[in-house]
Image (cartoon, rainbow, N blue to C red; front, top):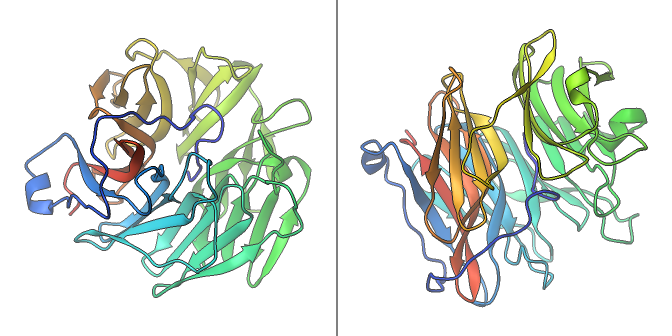
Length: 362
């Protein structure tokens, strides 16, 4: 799943850390192996200390390749510039992006070490990494007003889905790159905001009908998108989706987008609501697998950021992260039980872009 927090997860930054200019905290694999907790793996700041640097999306294709994306001013108070950083198996490094771009990158997908795709939030472009450099792969200049791009799922340089479900702003709709041509998808699939892919012919997604944003679920079988139904889904607006298999799909949601968050599970036959046991007032945000049949979530609290775990047997546990932390999205490192998390660290008067690690990276 590759989506930025455009609805339920507003930017949250605190004060308390000194401003830093291109400062990094390396996550050393040897040291990380001795720790099972969460730690800051990378911290950097670009531009004036008043800017709110941050990372919204993170994805990994293996132990030696991961990307995190965001911007130099995720508060939106200035135009800012996009930001992308890469894990090369040893350290996180800031990448060079095409010049002249503004805005923030909100989501990233990386199917291979020489193939990554990232999309802007409101400034209408998709970027492609070919293993050597980033380039602008597609723009949507026909939209004169701020227009949302909300997710991206890439399977190869010639098979990419870009989603722009409408929310606070109009969305670009759903676009599919097949070969060298972009095709606009119509129907219910034209308002997808995010998808979780099992394969190029098997995806689960959050979409919208004519009633409200993010109020339907869809499944793609390689040919068509079909709406998913179930009694437990009625009256909900969906937030995040994670498909681990066609008999193991997880969704966070709330009634009418309200505060009473729910966790839903599909077992291949029916949808059911799963009790959530987290500290009071914690809102689950990012979701990913723990590599052992359980789930990890990032969680927003009233006064702190949390890492929340649900084991395969249904046991919940929560860890409070460092003061001033914000983690928007999580990604499991394939072939491991380790994770990356993308977000911010407070650095008064602005914030730093930050990446967290859980478990050894190698």
